[in-house]
Length: 80
Image (tube, rainbow, N blue to C red; front, side, top):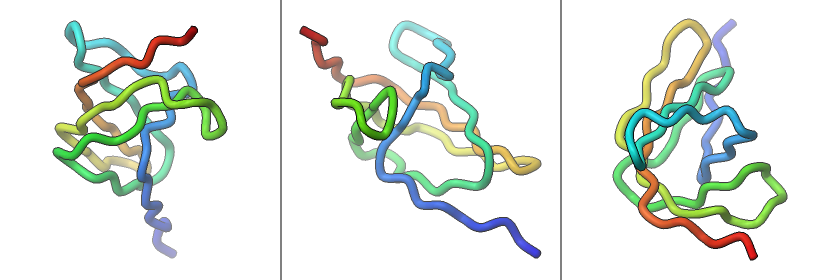
């Protein structure tokens, strides 16, 4: 039985993102997920939280039931 493919229209970090460079991040998610590439999308800490910024996904990799995304933060919303 194949693993279902989930379409994600935002990045939900849950604090799992790892900074690679100043505004470049990598994050792993369980399962195989589709993400839009090269267009700005919302970044949130949880599904229900306010947007914490906007990012552009540069790379999506699928391997052994894990989706790894590399994304660039293009704008950060202040959390006042």
